[in-house]
Length: 544
Image 1 (tube, rainbow, N blue to C red):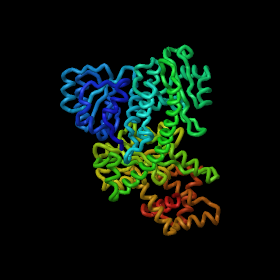
Image 2 (cartoon, rainbow, N blue to C red):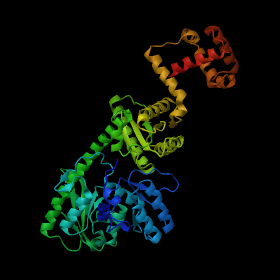
Image 3 (tube, one colour):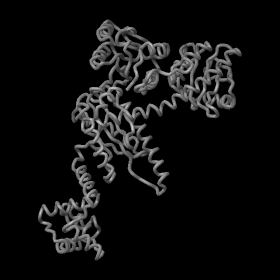
Image 4 (cartoon, rainbow, N blue to C red):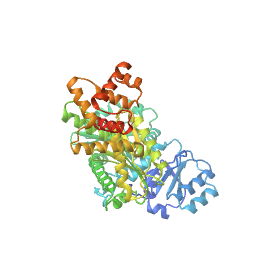
């Protein structure tokens, strides 16, 4: 589902700050064809790499391990590997990089893997599914904040960062190595350190920044805390709405022309941020359309799967839903449920992107569907999907109670619609249960699913109880008795009178008396297996 970007762009943006090219040719075949996804290596899991993955080799050290990893990921179609610097690139590593054609990078000491993954995914635009020709704003690709930061940095001849309203880093220009240590810390952490935020607040910088359209200047001597270079900043607005800010590291004062250039740049950044915000909704709708088309299993499924990077791959389908609830205010309740549902779906998308690279999540018809690529259509693949789903509901249970049904693994597109139906059936069983079970495979709840389908047929045909159950219900209505509930408790307890009596809170002797009355009033033979089954089935249909 990722748009591919070449290694040249990665090196241009991150090469001077985070990554060093250790081995491989930036103009080689893999590099030219680009990166399709970013995957964090997990030595304890057998991962299925998305097409053209750049693998972050957390914990991979030593020339033998690096060479073995290069060969392993090359066999799965990866295009590059990042390991922690310093990297000992001996003859074995260099030979393996040349043989596989992969690029090998070293991640600078002190940089976090999560930060690198976030930067790479943002840089590569992994959510731009099926994008047409890229739009541009003033010659800069729409939404490409890194390119825009570089353009502003070149215009001002200084390192630049773009931050959101909460001082989180959105993008940065090149030449950050020319800045001071606090700026490097901000880039590596993707967030302005708390001690600098407090200092800026104490100096009233934020108050001045947000109250004006002109740049605000702060000297290095005012800031302290290891800052050796001055700062200039300007607010980024769309009308009255504050979107963020641009920060410039200065070795000398800005001229009047450069100040005006910074003000003009803020307007351009605002357009890009608005474009990104609108694009998020567009991408969400596009993903939902592709997932819906794929799950229908028709002629368009093959193309939809290919556009999501899942073509010709076995997959497992999961379906997530929330409990039905209302607080008596229907409009408010529906709005709250929709908000909760979208929040849960977004959380599931983040969860799967971390644990199952290449997975796609979208809301279709009020249900959150996930399509997970797997190595083969097997029971083991389904079990791993169950584990991932269980981890999700366990982590989010306190905030957003969710049920997840797991369908049978689909070996190809022809079985995809059946996999979706399986997941839907499992989800329905969970939502009709007592709430104790949160995740289930379709094969585990097959009988319960059949009973629910039978209840649907009975309701559609206007079914009413017949025979003994009908007579017991009529008797209960006329005599205010509980013979029907007594029979249900006895059947649920598999004939254990003591347990059944406890379930309906009566004495055992009273319960035995009611059983005799059941045979007299209902005319049912409780010793006959077929009679018991017929009664159980009708009682279950009444319950559903």
